[in-house]
Length: 274
Image 1 (tube, rainbow, N blue to C red):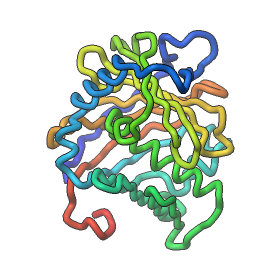
Image 2 (spheres, rainbow, N blue to C red; image 1 turned 120 degrees about the horizontal axis):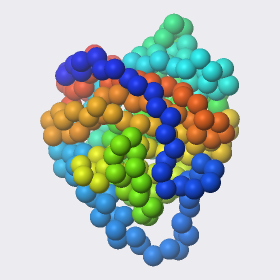
Image 3 (cartoon, rainbow, N blue to C red; image 1 turned 180 degrees about the horizontal axis):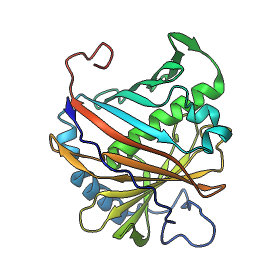
């Protein structure tokens, strides 16, 4: 496993340039013509992120560690689940299942999540739960983290409808903004919208804006995730630090986390992450 050196995480509060008025994610007409420019941009970004190299692998193991702001866990305790979501070991199947397995660790113990096309399963310290909000939150987190880690590869996997938006500037980078409509959405939602802010020069993703319709307590909310400090491992570009900022219903930081280790195609495919 490749271990990632510690990186400084800096919180920023930047509105997505090009969206006027209140923070929103636009929706194109369902019957709008295919946006060939958006499809081409998605392909360029996927290539820059290492799509071809990624397809040579069966799975990707990562380790994350992070910190939460003081406020959000108090109003979103089920989603943040800070007693368990401190550090994590996670497996992302690339082919053929695209499943996600996560083991979270915190002061209260271990939370294990399995997410695949058939549903989501969660246990706390070895005890399964059937609580709907807990399952919805776990499914949302698993899908969202796959998006944050893989960026345009996730949008390609989902075969999402994509549209071009007005370009803008994100954290000093000139970016094209790509809208992706996910049906089904993230987690157990019927639909979500994602805006990828794609660097015009490198075609790397500089900002991800998402709707959060998969959990009843977050419906109507919008969050921005800033991936930073990319590194190339086995031909795949991976962010090593992330900042998450809720943009609606209020503007506030939520979560900072970083990638601490990476391994492609680990030998213990059927067991726990090591």
